[in-house]
Length: 363
Image (cartoon, rainbow, N blue to C red):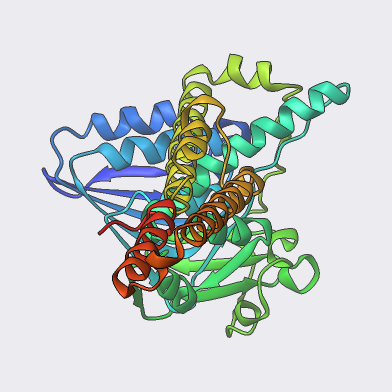
């Protein structure tokens, strides 16, 4: 059983997710999840309790999307661990609460593929798109920039409650929960979180990745009588992007649409930045060059630097030639005129006007 959904009263429901997510892990599908919530009727409050190591990214994405658009107020409580796909499912909450010794982990999506080099490249590109959609969920909740979120995902970041609160991944912290280790932990390394909602157990492989701070939390030893061994996790046998689309057509469409919208937004902002940079170079003698760089033969500010420098040099050279011509003209006037101070002042004024006009200064 991947989760348990029950109505607490006519308007409030509780969802307990203490298992891996998705039918590939022997659980139920997102379709079942949506149906069970709809069957509860007109509920206005949902309490989602999570203690999960993650699972199928597309199933979790579908569950997240449904919860996020549900009219009910959603409170999510991380009862032990929200890792991988379970961490971005938690982002559906209007309020996210983490006990002081709970953990959250985010990382990049992964899959297994078989095929030639071109197939590998296609799947790698697809995984990048999936990563972008997951990052968008974290960005919407935390307000952190895309570069920061992706860096955290690249590093497989583990957060305790205080770290998650400071980064915006949760809204409140709470008292510590009880963490138990079964007798089997002494050899197998299994760890179990015991809460009022039940017990969830995690394997040695996952436990080994937990940060040192989590390993220092005092554990209560108990027998293994009522704790079952986690099931082996089957491998998702996806050979290429076409297989993914065949299995999850709607989710793949949403991923592609989201990626296209993000690329369009980045392109618009880049074009605005290019035009602003060109406007910043405006000056005498440069209008034609900048207009051409904007609309006829698109270039950025760096591309037209040499042209602008040449235009400036040409303008200054022309001004110098006119100054020389004006001075020569004054020198050729009859000597009698040079004795008049008024004539000298007038010649100097004409030269100054010529220079000012060439360099863009008006009276």
